[in-house]
Image (cartoon, rainbow, N blue to C red; front, top):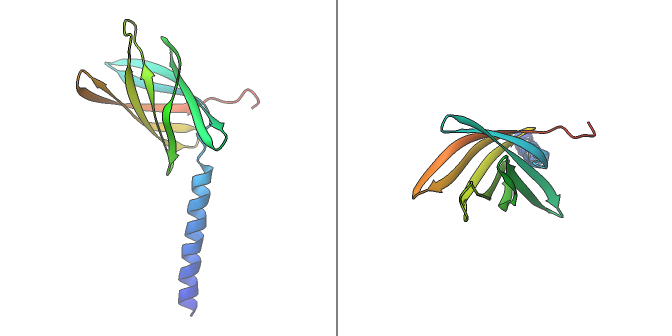
Length: 134
């Protein structure tokens, strides 16, 4: 009887620990993103907030004002969304898909976009900016 109770206790504690870890993942805040394309360092600003029980957000770049994020999801510690990126001289722009692993005050992941029928991916990292209240 003791081995069964011990196994049940271990599984129960693992389940509680897993549930606690999911709740500890918090993507809310302002994030300074950094990435490299064509040998040039680039930056973007990602803002995530809670809208009721859902997440909402925007992304901006030095040459583009904020654009709303689409399909924003947080599942198993991974934050995913897409954003419309417009470069100078482009009327329509293109969609960039993002996927980040949330690790405390850091995001690590990839972005991907279709350029002329060719999908290109690049690595991205972000750090949560400190609150003015800190």
